[in-house]
Length: 114
Ligand code: 5GP
Ligand code: ZN
Image (cartoon, rainbow, N blue to C red):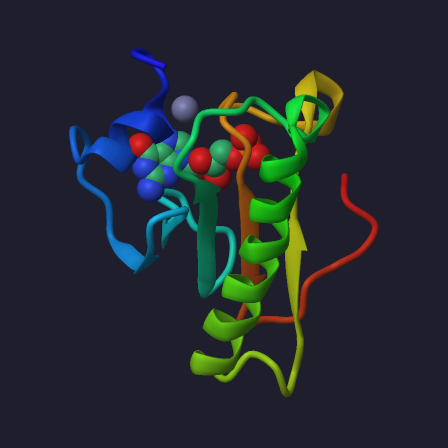
């Protein structure tokens, strides 16, 4: 998608602070962190949300959770815990229409969300 900010990051047209990359996914630091650790993990193929995934897309989401688990372990977040968030649509608070998973940690996260 030409105008998608995350597609531009994936293509290297917008710089990002990369945390992890393979042929299917990219993980990079959020530009406006809400916690000491705030990483976004995105599939490299443009899909708006979980509502539009095909079979292969669902497999990649599974892979994203494996990547999130590896990153959390590397950053030693696994002992105290952390959060994975996927916002969907307007009421869900999604501002970038390219599916992404927030990995948040490094502080005590409050619940419920606002
Ligand atoms: P959403 O609100 O859609 O769930 O999350 C979008 C996230 O993308 C926000 O946390 C926002 O800070 C982040 N974001 C938006 N534009 C950029 C950008 O150009 N670079 C990076 N690294 N993060 C971005
Ligand atoms: Zn995109």
